[in-house]
Image 1 (spheres, rainbow, N blue to C red):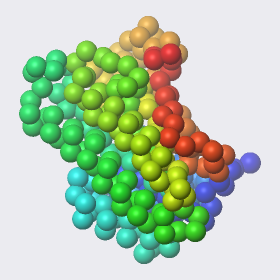
Image 2: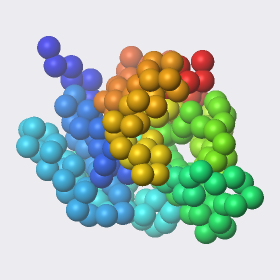
Image 3: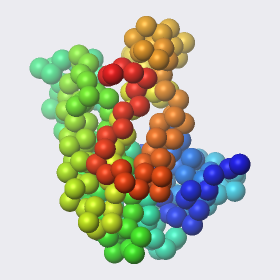
Length: 256
């Protein structure tokens, strides 16, 4: 039987044009949510929205830059204007710049871009979402996408990225305490290597990655994006009503 945990609710997903963000958006729609998909590029957002609508769901695609407070405020307003509320939000937009470079060689532009999108972008989206949710009788639930690289573990060549994702973990837990009294539950999911382009080494094919994962991850493979989405949906659902300020690691045992 198909579950409908989110029927009648509105879910917003940033970075929804591909990868984990798209998988999360599709999963919410499959469980009855009206889904607002956001990102910087229109074409992949329209593709995600079309996939939702072809499956019988309702979607709204909104181009937005999470590093702009005005953009994320307008994004939340668009969601409420179309569907009447904002019940769930997933702050997934993020970038990895300068992968493989030690700290001393990370360019300033790459560092600032990761800070802007991975940290400031999450903060600004979180602020706009909470401001709406705390006006609603039912409050809301927010999940920020952090990473197993950060507070949970370090990998040489990804230190700058890990620093930004560690900030997301800490921001999530502090915001959770700040806003649970407002009726807003805030948590994080920290994926490990998953079936997206971000987990590929430069020039590596998916088959080569699969062989590498057999020995580098205890589970022996990358996580499917649908598995990451399942963790997100759990934290946003009523099943997790008493889960506040957690950072759920989904990494095949890499940081166990």
